[in-house]
Image (tube, rainbow, N blue to C red; front, side, top):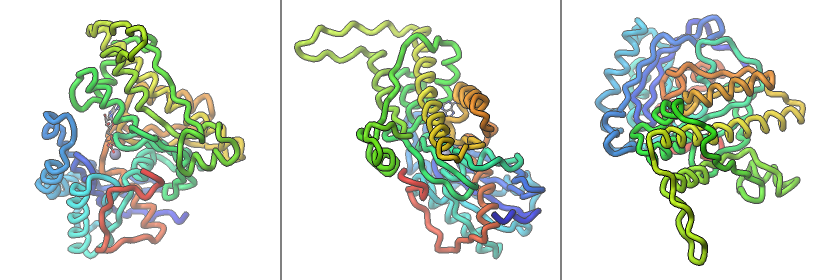
Length: 380
Ligand code: KG4
Ligand code: ZN
């Protein structure tokens, strides 16, 4: 791939969900360097609904986008006239929210006479591990573990990601959020469940691990696996069985006619809640680690040993997930790129970082750029 030009300055904009974000990233000595990274979170707005309300999110983006961009330029000490391009997360996400960032990015690009680039949010999460760091060794495995995605890719460079497997139901971050709701931990659930897990015993409850086979899963990854053996395990994920198992552990197994009534659930003491958090987290992370390990073995067997694991997405902020992926990397001799926490959660630095490779590849979009609710990377 052609290397980006030294000194290139990109303004990134991200409004796909409930964070209004802008960042300035400059290419310096082979590394995308973050000059500023501003995130205005809307958690306070959505907390009482225990989830993101799309219409409220887009209205808040509209109010915040210009001040957030100004702050990003100001704290980077960059004059808008010095920018070389504007990049915007244009897919996937909430369509009303995406529209705001998209319109703002096009307006800045048009008024400054510079190119606009639409960036896939899922691909950008994979680029988070490339920020402020030297280039990794390729090929890589790319894992996106967020509130909307749990997807595993094979990558040969930052711009090309081939889907190996994905969740067939909930995303892992979504599963953490739903588990937190079941346990009444409040919103946002993932970080609270993470914190609470450190007070619990992960061995207290044994939650099941799914065993997805080509026969049980439909789709391209399953077809490829199933061509040889319908009972071959796929590289897909599933978290809804785990969520149901947690629900039963909390509320009890529903009785079925003609069967002995199931035992009453254990009382939900504060210690029991912590134990359930730790056990749930351990099971969710064990599944992620298992799929990544099998993907590594599969690629290694075909002579394409993954040298790096790029990780991104909000759930990669989870402390247990980070520790387990790091030790998997050590076992397999694979470098694991765990982004700084600020770049795990939604941010615009990852959007601007990825744009540098698109620019270097000669790619540009124009004012016809439109948002889309769906990712361009595989089935989402
Ligand atoms: O990447 P992100 O900010 O937004 C999406 O693109 O979805 O991810 C948000 C998700 C939420 O589901 C949130 O609960 C989860 O990431 N999350 C965590 C942690 N921090 C954020 N999940 C588990 N442990 C955490 N520490
Ligand atoms: Zn995200």
